[in-house]
Image (cartoon, rainbow, N blue to C red; front, side, top):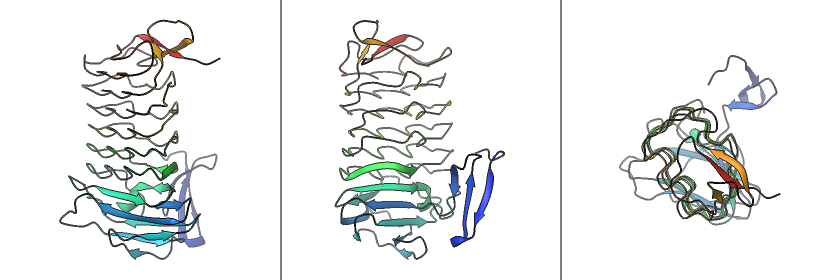
Amino acid sequence: MDLTNFSSIKIPEGNVEKIVDNVGRILWENNNYLYAEAVEDGTVRFEWNRVPSSLPVIEYSVGSKNSFSEYTYGTDISLSVGQKVYFKGDNEKMSSADNNLILKSSNKIKVGGNVMSILDSTCKLKKVPERAFRQLFANNSKLISIENLKLPATELARDCYGFMFFHDTGLNYMPEELLPAPVLAEYCYQNMFSYCDIREIPSNLLRATSLAPNCYSYMFSSNYNLKTLPSDLFKALEYFSCSCEAMFDETGMLMSETQVDKYTRPFRIPYQGTGEAPLDAFVNMFRYTDGIFSGTPEINKTYYLWEES
């Protein structure tokens, strides 16, 4: 991250340090720990789909960022409405391999803070290991908001966020700033939001200009209420094998190859400029969708999205 034009402000209360931009937006905060917030009374816990031979040490604190204890995996943490539990650790080399750390909850929750705090308690780490957060919040219908969640890593690794929110059917929104990495890795966002209830994708969500094979494959598949896209969603010029394979497969996407009826808003990959891609870069990208056009789009060709008047 280029911090040339930003200010570092040390706030004495609790020895908090922040980096803010010139309009006061917080870009980094040393104690912005990952948290779960109860929307209803209930419990949360971390568990493993397969227990690794060496367990990363994670600490937790309920209601405060100042009193942490080592967490025992599988132990329920009770929360009342509005109460937060914070997590931190120093596990910089944590890679899940086939062992996926998963956050579970009994009742509705929001998650926020910096996900990297469980790898680096100072929240300064910008490199995420291979498969580190794969399935981290997956299969949790009680997760209803990630509005304040930060995934600030700028150096990604293979499959690092794969299936992260898979089958979180209570999730219908994502913040525009969620995915800041400029360079992607193989499978990094694979199935990240599959089987959620995403209904709108922010225009600047996909900020990366350097892609990788399978980086977006199946990313939003099976979001049945997702019917349209921002015209300027795809800004990268170069695509690779299966970069966008089945990205919007089995969604409600309404697209046409020609302007007809209410199919009036242009959509193109890339949005501007001339792109390059192998034949399989967009294979089945819009397969089983609800529009006149479905299947595999062509690069540098203009399509049309349904636009309600």
